[in-house]
Length: 165
Image (cartoon, rainbow, N blue to C red):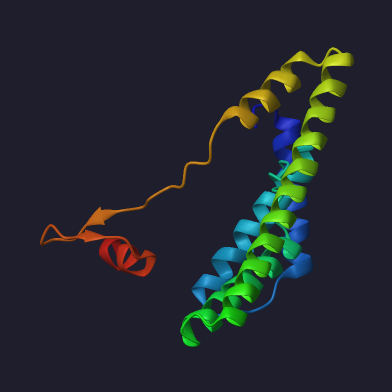
């Protein structure tokens, strides 16, 4: 905050927020999260920051239900030693899951293309290219690994946190 007016306004808002929401708490974690929320909220109101748009994926509750149904049908088929009825139930559940997923993904892609067309027609080239590049990138899961003192790789979040404490 380079300008003194903004710095003063932020300081006043932060003091006001802390006075409103202050309570005596001995837990250091709760105090830390409270202070973090206070700083981000007051800074956001002073600097007029907006929440970033979260990526809306096509896989929703209906897709999840279809997948769970298919997985349950698969387990039943395995338990019944592949009887004809169990195999048919599994095939039906699998085709239903595939149909639901294809339908949701198609709708998602159509909405994305319509949004890109809208941005192109409004000459919002920066937003257009940002969304276009985002849609072209594949999902890359982040793997968080570190080595312990013996050189073994740690992949569990709790183990990694204990390593650095």
